Amino acid sequence: MLKSERHRSIVEMCNYHGLVSVSFIRKELRVSDMTIRRDLDELAEQRKIVRIRGGAQSADYEKEEGQRDRKELSHLEKMRLHTKEKQYIAKKAAECIDEEDTIFLGSGTTIELMTQHLTNKKIRVVTNSLPVFQLLKEQHTFELYLIGGLYRDKTGAFIGTMAHEVVQKIGIKKAFIGANGLQQHMVSNFSIEEGTLQRIVLDNARKKYLVADANKFDRSDFYNFYDLRQVDALFTDFTLPAGVKRNYQQFTTIIN
Image (spheres, rainbow, N blue to C red):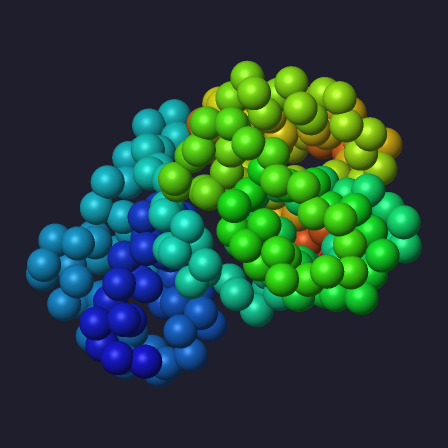
């Protein structure tokens, strides 16, 4: 990985998580501690991050009643984070899709990876995600529906009243929705408008599934759009600590 790519990835991690450790960065980028520490020092000199003992934090990090401002990452930025874990989740979630199912796939990079595991399945797919639609449109083994509405560039999703009216009239057997944050029984994301559509979809689905990598646990984003206790299962990855899993299993089934 080029130095410029490492620097960009480190800044993105800091902006997304607020605080990151050297060991976390090493795991994500697969480079030596010495290289990471040198990168952190350079980025701190450029005032792109703040150097702290054992790691770094976002330049915009705020310690105020345990909360911090967190900007929403672009679709491309999200694609670069936790790819191995997201691929694991996508495969696990796709395994619960059966022949003849009508499924809803929401927006998000983990759900986009689910499309790799849907080939040769005789199903009906409904989505409000343009990236998901584009990934599936060349596959002719199933029916594919794209819900229209107001286009949201950050996630490639269609939202708003038009989308609400359509999903309320569709019989969805299994819905798969991504989450930005899981704080006890509350599920959150960045956008009120997108969260509202996700809530309507989940309410109308017979089986309600969430997908979220382990880094989303014990975090909250701007808008709480659903109650984890109303979800049938949450698909996550193999890095979730056992103690965290036990805590969240009181609200729903955790599959990892």
